[in-house]
Structures are given as C-alpha cells and as structure tokens.
Image (cartoon, rainbow, N blue to C red; front, side, top):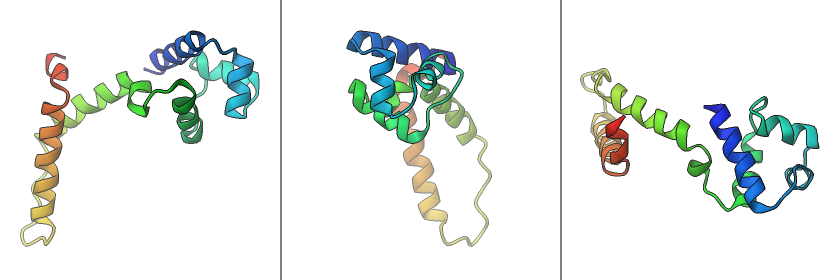
Length: 116
C-alpha cells in the first residue's frame, strides 16, 4: 500500500507544478528525504502528512485511500467477532452504541467496500 501512496504523492506534486526541491522546502526536509517519501522508501511523519495535506489541498483520508479501504474492510470483519462485554460492566451501553455506530458508518458511508 505504501507504493500506491507514494505514487499518489508524486502524482499530486507533479499536478501541482511543484518540484521535489519546492516540496522539500515546504516540508522542511531535505530533497533526498522528499524523494525517499515519494519512492515509498520512507513514510512521512504525522506532521509531514498534515503538511502534505495542506500543500495539495487534500484531506488526510484521500491521501491514504487504499489503506483506509483495507482498514474499513478489516474493521467490518472484526466487528462480527468482537468478544462480549463482561457481565455487569458499567460501560456496556456506551460500548454497544459505539459498536453499532461504527458498523453503520462502515456500511452507509462506504458501500463500495462491500464489493471487495
């Protein structure tokens, strides 16, 4: 998945008209580090990801579309096998509400994942 992400970053940079030197300067890293990020040899830090999101005008999820899709599919599967809450646990109602809301978001917001 990192290669898809790296290719997406490189494409976004080229579409923006920025050079790697420009991007490195805006990220406050060296050009070789920028190159390694774009070639999938180095994952950007959270701060660098936020900066890239701002540079390219793209939200965080769109930068990691493939990884988010995998996470949604995995979560949907793990929801079906989550252990029962302990008897008498005070957070039981909140827990169930959270799990139900998560399941609804995964199905309603991302129906295209059902095809995978």
